[in-house]
Length: 387
Image (cartoon, rainbow, N blue to C red; front, top):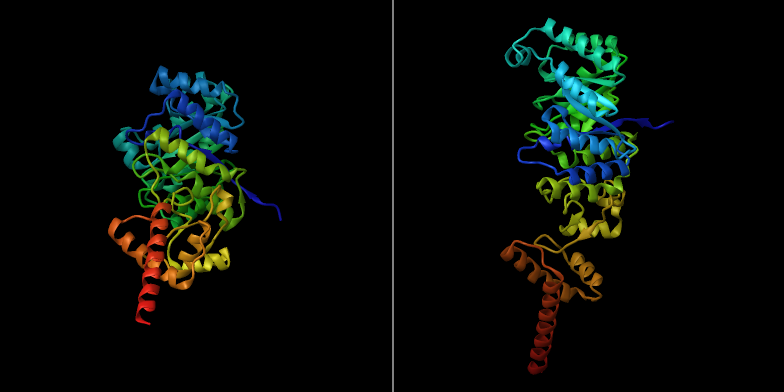
């Protein structure tokens, strides 16, 4: 049976950079784009031409790289922004317009007919220029689905190839996402792209649900950067689709750690230690029962092999460690312990972790070992004296 495919459009360089306080230099943009392209990400959304000359210069620099990824620029659905976007000569022009009544009425101060006419006019103009066009429904998750279908049908008739369903405020759950995308996929011949935000912590789940419902594309950002709580993280969405449902993304996932570190450095947003896939401690084990199980067979506590994402299991000692963990840790230092030594050292490890709120390093472990030898010698001396 052939593997099912989904296309990832990574928007780290557009929506990711819209995180408050994040601003990439030209060099950082080039490095990030190259890293993503080399990892096999098929599409990159790289900027907003209407932001001005500096932004357009960066976009043109990225276009000039000749990356294997297709490049997309983001534009509002108006003639001025469209002309700037077309001047950049990216592979795809994305035209975005609000589709919820609240944003049509309060933000645009227009009505639904105005939106439909604007979509028809701008998409036709873009296609006439030879552009591949994606149409985005901003705030689609709060919009009337029948009206979204009208917008998408007009976009398709005007020549657009894709419709982006934007959960702009991150208010959907996977069940509603599946229902809405299923209806769109069943009614349209367009590519359908899911743009999920993480305000309620569901961006990855909503992206997966959209693909299962028939979406051909999803938007992601490295480390989940993006407005407010961010977007669906590239590393999470790609691994979830592969591991749970067998979808092929074409990505070299072993490159996730280096890409994650690059974006963390460029954005100034450090990665939480427990961040799935790329966090420093997500393959680190302390609890004695887990370590014992891993030593016997990694499958006991491994949902997937960390080497698939360029990582490896790491065993550390702490308050929740057991004797087998201590024996294993010291074996890696080239020191063989008997059970009595391991128990003596375990007591020191637990006291250390409670007092200093950190994992003991190799230097600490050597000190514990020296102390255990001293205690053992003292014990032997006491026994000899008693006799």
